[in-house]
Image (tube, rainbow, N blue to C red; front, side, top):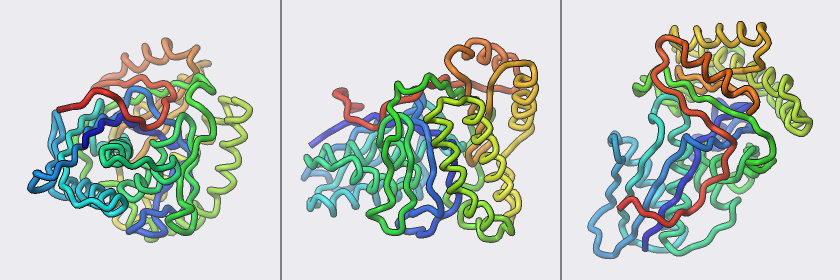
Length: 326
């Protein structure tokens, strides 16, 4: 009973920060994202009756005890749903750093969910897979469907799920993930979200999200890159304003982060259409259309302090692949 899945990380255009239900990971607001072609996780899950305990391995790295426990909890949810008691062996690898605000938990739990149920011999609907992935890591539900994805916040576990708005071939948007710090961040996303209600501005943010969702859906429908980019940047800055006014404040940006933001404003003024997005970390996502990717890559490579870049197209969602990691 073995299966391997590949799942993309995703970058949210309209982000979520804060949970309505911590245990079920139901968000305070809906969100819209794009799956990333070159930032992904591959995970093999094997259930066997002679395994004495669960084993979790990250190739090229390591998991903390807390991270391992989250993976085992994900396995337990699969066992409970399927009705089996066998322990599992999990081996996983990423194409990008984990714990740096680049959605490694999203791709990781999406891959674990798809591989786990496949290894157990059970086929779920896409909606059901997004719900199970969400319970491991909220944004993991957005890595299950294809391309451009909306996560409906819902009010219960059954109606908090993700679905595709457009396929991965709908619009030639490019995302450059710019790594300026590959070290684990000191405050994980889950822990950081717990402080949202200490910001005096959090209610205004949540109240404004429905209008942002409508604006982003319109920008996507029209393929209006300027509207698209402006909406992304406005929401990014708004979310980080909440983080920075929490108690204690979360300052995820570093000097290189701010330098890239400054460069983006300058590039746009000079006629290169490019916009930025930043999740809960210092690393930056840069968006352009396919026709501008070469010019943008050259400019990014000229910035001091950039450790690496990952150039992404929109991607299909999580799916099983034939080759196993062990």
